[in-house]
Image (cartoon, rainbow, N blue to C red; front, top):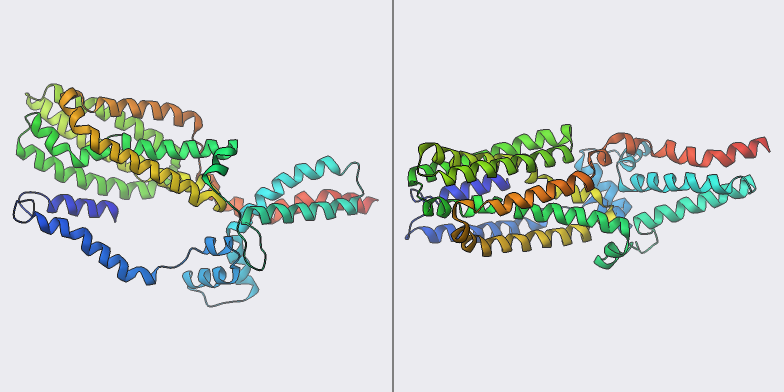
Length: 372
């Protein structure tokens, strides 16, 4: 819907539609109408089931999941099926993984039955820590920017999230959308080529985003993101070549075609994936804080590009996209080393293995107790 709205906004701003000195106030009024519609629909927005579980409101989360899945059953089988999909089970897997190593260290020198008690207490502590506790008041685990920065593992994840969302803006994509008309005009491209480029650029944005929705679950986030940034870098080279030869028909086609291909490559990876990866890197406890920090950096980068591109384009002229290409090269090199594949963190085998993982972790002392 975002890309479709962008397409409609770009088309409505064309001189042949509402982009005139008399009709432009209609374009300015559209966001007001959209905001009013959002306020009217606000009471219909549902809470997140994961968030309800996180704050200790498990019953509400269960009923909401059942309602969303179209089931009226409240039996134990339905509850079990819903619970296996919850964030609690994922945190339980992580707790059991650390528990197995812990039990292996203490089982040799401990009484088997006391080791089981220690193990059970360890599981309870780990899962309550991951979920923010399960007290009567629904206490929540704490998260803040300082916690994210103090923990080395969380800090490295935050760096990846921030770098990815900052690069989304510093790639030059909003220059293509917001300033391509001015940029092409200042470099002598005719209005006929500019209008067709605007239309095809937005159509490519919608089409590539639809294709990306199908590709993301099949090829992985990391693969698509790296290929997207590499292709965008190559198309910046094509745009620069075209702008340096803009007086020739080949140069005009290279520049305008390069912009359309640049937007297409963005929609296949760097457009949607930066908003997915941070959400999958962090657990429920830290997800909102991390996404808030990354989104703030994203918008600050957006503002930086908006304030600096026009002066930059007057200084660099045909080479105005080169700095964005340098940013993409730096990010691609960093992401190749630091960005993990987060697709597996959402896979069903990990969720379904929760029971067997916990059982395996606790089975060691139980087996030895039988022998004793």
